[in-house]
Amino acid sequence: MFSQVVMPHWGGDCMDVDVSYLKEHDVHLIKVKGRLDSYYASELENAIEPVLRKAKKIVLECSEVTFLSSAGIRVFLSLMNRLKRRGGGLVLLNLGETAKKVLRTSKTLDLFFHADDPTEAVRLLKGEK
Image (tube, rainbow, N blue to C red; front, top):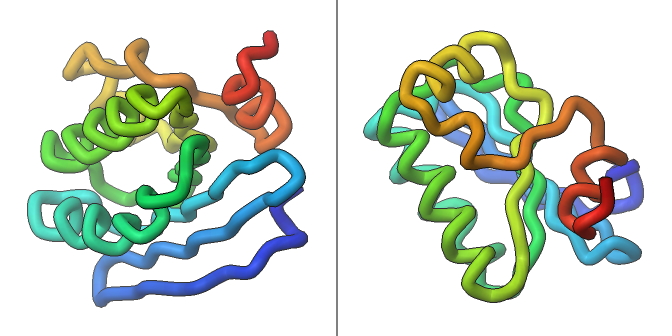
């Protein structure tokens, strides 16, 4: 579904971020790989700031997130709130069991739309069920 896109890349030692744009659905796909701890969460924020200037709808692909701390959750919440204020939204795609457990434990999982496939994620952003 997201194969027809340009993919700029930002990478670090313990985290990578790939950004894609699916024009027909006006959705940005951000693939996050690695640790989302206090250091790399701020790096993620810096890496996606240019996307946030123009995006309203973001799918955050999280299947390769290996660690999620409260700082990572803060980034997710901040991103979601910024997008909502502009009439958009955020979907967490392919959350691994470790990330889901952290979100459940912190009682934040239900605050986010989350999906297991890209088609479902786009539907959630469009407000479809």
